Each structure stands twice: as C-alpha cells, then as structure tokens.
Image (cartoon, rainbow, N blue to C red; front, side, top):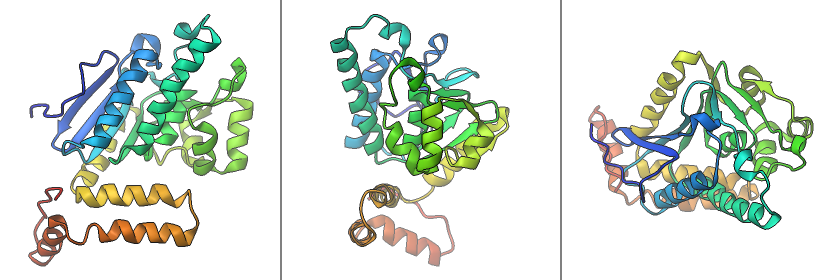
Length: 270
C-alpha cells in the first residue's frame, strides 16, 4: 500500500510509516546513537504527537519501536548534553516535557514494541505508552540517579501507576537494570516475545485494535486515562459522558447492524 499518512514536515530522526490501513509504525531512527533522544528528535516527536492530536488521519493504532536490534531508546543524548549550560539543559528539557505530554494526550492507542534496551527516558517512554510488548533480549532501567539527576519524563508518575509505589522506588532509587521477564512480572510490559517474533505479535494485536470502531477506541482510551486521576464517582461520570458521545455515531449503528447480519462491520470513524 502507499503511505497515505502525512507528517508535519520531513523527519530526520524518526521514521513514520503507515504499514497497513489505519496502522502506523513510528521508529526511533538514530541507531548509531543508541536511538537516543536529541533536540531534533524532541522537536520531531512533539510535532508528530501534536499533529495526531489535531487530526488522526484515519490512524487507529500506533506501534512505537527502535531501529536495529539492540536498543529501543537510550534516553536523552548525553553527548549532545555534555557541557550544556544550565539554561540550555532546561530549555531542552522543556521541549522534552511538551513532547511527553503530547505523547500522553495522543488519542490513538500507542503500543511500545521494545526491541532492545530501554534506559532512562526510553523506559519512561515505555510506561507512557498505553501498553508494551518486549523482546526477550530487552533490558530496562531508570539510571538517572547514577548521573546526579532523577527521572524527568514522567517516570516518577507513570512507573508507580504501572508497578506500584514500592517497586517503583526500588527501580528508581537503585538505578539497577532488569530483564524483560521481570518487566512483565512487575507490570512494565504486558508480554515477552521471542526476539524474532516481537513485531509479528505486536502487529497482530495492533490489527485487532484497528478492526474496532475508531471513535470508540479514542473515547475508551481517554476515559481510562482519567481513571487514574480522579475518584471513582467522577471517573464514572466522565465515562458516561464519553459513552454518550458514541450513541449518535454512524459507527454505533453499523456495529449493531453488522452483529445482527453476522458480518464484519465497516467502521468509518463517523
């Protein structure tokens, strides 16, 4: 198929490809630099996630992975950061903060396909995504404490939500790496795949999501994100508001009609 998805401008550090109808694969594409996040990648990711917040372009699921076989994302590019002034560091980090929030706010489900090491900001990206699968060779760590800083990409917020506060404290305060199997046991990832089967299994799950009604996908994701931020009663009120917006849609009518006619629904996102 031709790649119908249009990026805001040509990207240098991120590869974006609509591999099938409604399914986007986004790849950190700096393998010689450990797929680490430099300022240019921060700009490109911010523009990508922001553009998808404004216009989903028919995309129903995104797979986020790293180029090559060894590293998913090594976090911030410390070579670029070497000898930065305090002001330069904080300005770059402000860009990364906006990028992180744009990723969090993206209405499209994002699955991390962790093909290798996910350290520092790379691991923070994993726990910001909606869920994740990991290759058996993948390794994880939040190592910021070892270089005199701390997680600043929502790591102290998203990790406790994923693994619990006590486990998160152990991971962050020791900075010790852990395996894909441990990541799955603790709740950082949903599934461990054989190295050569990772993308196959992630894409299979992504296709399942893509076959569902897109407006329902977006509303359900939004409601679940609110669930960790408010009390049960207010969370349920938000859920019902999100639910009611789906009742007058063409997709709701098509879904019920297809069920009764015993056929696959043809959802249009309307």
